Length: 213
Image (tube, rainbow, N blue to C red):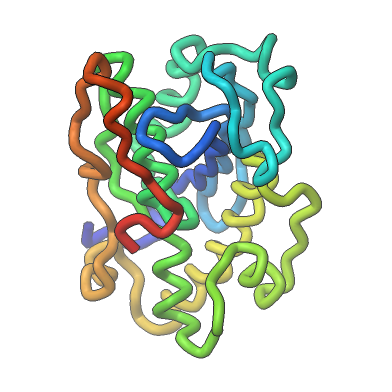
């Protein structure tokens, strides 16, 4: 927690989901890795959620697009390897991390990472902004997302935005994860309670993109 940002590897994660209910699933994941202020690697894949996609209007992913995609358990090892030992980043991290954690819990494992949230960072760094939606912020940071609401493109843009945010943090003397505790960051691994996958799926709890924020 007291190490400088330069000592960490960061991975920006974005997930697209079949809906926003507790029993909805991830249908796409994108990840962008940052080392020493540079983007060094990327990973993205569609995922067959084995449930119907109900919010296609949000991200454009339709059921037929994921028919031949791997199920989560078949790419879980790649995801786990990609994020091993890193600090995670997402725009409204509780949303993305909860869904990711649910998927790992279904495989009887879990997340154990610190994470930063670019939404929460923006609210602290840019209190004058009327909005902190990703599309609005990218415009303010002069970044172009050529494929909005798709996981790989969003993760890449969020990574480039975070690099600009990180420079501002360091300029203001906020150079460690510990120094961000005054802002309620970083989040720890307790994104959500461990769930019983076999419980009655009619008991649905909605997870919105503003959950916990």
